[in-house]
Image (cartoon, rainbow, N blue to C red):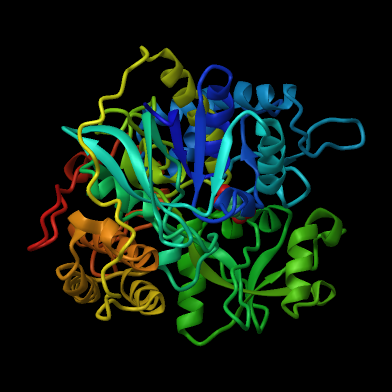
Length: 528
Ligand code: SIN
């Protein structure tokens, strides 16, 4: 008998919205790696983009999303996002979610990079994600079982049909959950990079699970680096929201030179990939880069979390300058899904950052990810509710339930070694030599791992194997894409800058079709 109708892996916004919609008629279990509040959604400062403003229209939101995405987007997916966005947000408000309003009760709309107009809803100033997650966790209480501290280590698949998931507890014990449908909502993979805005649990597990299960993956080379992470002494993960630039902050060197002037017409509000590379160029010249926030009135009230994080890290808001540099933020590619969240494996679904419907193209537009969670999680839930009841067929007793583990793998690299290699060779700027070098380095470890017997390894080793796997897949994809586009910048190939794309009015990128599916095979490693 199944443990649940639906098992959802992950506890960010996409997971919670899917669970809420399903919980009225389905028995739903959420499984999460650490605590239910460990997710990128919790850390999201910037808000939800939706064309609800008087002078806005979903077509304008569509245009901005496509331009930021370097026209690599699936226009069908973007249309779905931006057309459904306003009503999805209004439904959320109708159920009690509170977004920031002015004194008259009108929702305040903020500005962020590459948006042609103000269309970003915020909650709690700069804690939109936290407010939304808290709101949903309250609504879910008593309706859905949330299991914390369990890491999904293997999807149970027979004949391309998913029927459950095996997990590891914090004590490294194995557990199995059978379900009619399994949903991956594990977030992206920021944790494979040295500098990242992501939660510490986000190490690409969902991508690695899907890969081992034989699911199709797509667009993995497109990694968004957020331009403005606070430079902290201890390397802790602190994002300075793009909304800060939206309210008038601008990037300067220590001599006060504005670095975005002359780089892009939108200056500090250019698409993220362009701003991130401009900062990187300055850093490589030996210049420190700062956000000049002196023009923002009432900064502490408008950005309470950022102010607190700055103070904690010894940066005085009153001085008017925040030292920043780029960090890995968002994976545009992922597990390939259709608009209902269906992956290429039957009964396996994906939603949120782990999934790729093509909605973000080569570079995600700011604040489109929380909107994606709302719109696509609702669609996924409705789709699952429409499926006929299925009796899951549990093919055989699972062999790997023993709680004795292999000896620790002494040859594995440390997490720090992986993140440093990825930052150096497959980060903001890439080129063939470095990519090949890191691909071979990653492959040398993967060849020695028994990926078909993943459950035999210790949980912390599985996490490292997942990081190696996802890194290898990203690097292989980055090598295959011999052009620069959005979040994939090859210094050895010409860059198609966003403005030129707009001027030429190129509607769809042929490259998407050429590279839509890259066959990934580890040399010498057999995957089922
Ligand atoms: C930010 O606040 O800058 C991040 C929001 C996002 O990634 O869309």
